[in-house]
Image (cartoon, rainbow over the protein chains, first blue to last red):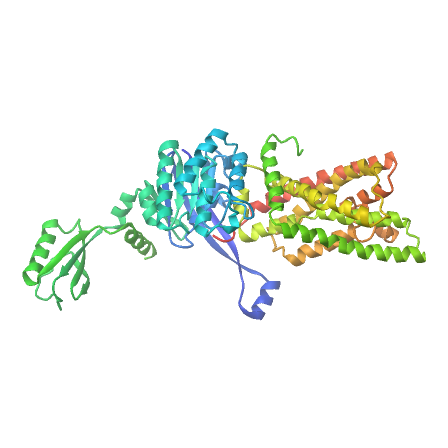
Length: 333
Length: 269
């Protein structure tokens, strides 16, 4: 067990300040704090080699959870163990084995060429020269860094900087990799490169990866497990396929007609199939595949084709995106 | 305590990069180098006038007092590195998160960083500064005889000043340490440590009171011992008091920092 989290809670004290001059004066002398519970009673454990995606809407507590896992925030209650240690009290020990990337914080030295930062990390993490050179060559090739290495960090674009930051973390040869919004400034090509390199490392080094991201496509490609967090609570823990199954009880039929139609009065819609949307040339219906059998669906489409000429029709499983939106809706209801 | 650390090579790497960082901006170096002499010119003419009219008896000759100020402002260029605002910036921007996640101790990492910067400042400010002053001002006395004692007290001064800056920096975990606070602390330090006025020129009661504080070790004692070397007993006594202050401040900051981190919240996502 690489990570074990048991009943963790974290509450922030947030200063409340009223707008305007009087409000400002008032909060100068009588500061008012409100409590915000960022993480409530979360428990899970992660074994070596797993790739776990943490997803949730803005302010759900993903980053707070990551910061507690890496040992920079102290949980109010509950236990966290990372590689058999307490990440907060043994932070210095733990940080030797973990790599952390915050998408919106740079881990490079602003005034110096990228190479100087990389060299510093080699010495800080005591990476052997051979390993370091091999990793650097490989990363420079995949991320196209060769032209950037001698440039001062301040002259790089945001995307270039994020690519270098990711490389800097990889060069530390971590056992556990924490990525908080790694794709935030990357273009599509760079995201593909990142996914490729992470899959490579996972295979070659038995790396454990924990990603918090809004980019569900990346999560779907990389992760074999997903934690869904909403309002500080864990609402789902399981594989991507399970998530789709749990929240996606619906399948979607889309029928495209050759000519505009006005209404569906002439057709008998079977029980269990609900019309989601009727556009002039397009009909979208939802149904539960546990309730409605496939031949009923086919018969319904055939029935439609007797009345109007159909150009095409398809049945889709919803994307992970739709599944997640659905999940948040359910947890808020 | 500092050097017994087996991870010295990591700290050496930090020292190296902060040296490199210092050399990144050439204009900064030039302008900071030119700033301190401006103040020194003021002191020079002030004490020149005072000594010619023999208005007060200071207990220092003109040559001694001029050396005191010249060396004092050179010293300031090495000691004052703005560690406090650096820590405060880290906390405000949330960069502290990344710095805490390195496999080294934050308190000592910052120390070695300041050693790197200090070395750079000695090379780029002090050595040329001494050369320029030696040529322009005939009355200076940079005799080598007193340099051993000075060096010893310079090291104590460097460490104590570092710990004081780190202490102020730690306060930024609780309040927003802004330019105003940093500026006020710096002014108080200048006054209480003898950079503005040698401490024995204050009223005797104030001088005695300041003797119980660590600040006199920053400018007053190194500079005074340079121009008026102490006898062995006095030198040793102050040396031991200095070392005790170093240990006390070190322990205080260790305690304060561990408390500060426990109540840390990371700004900015």
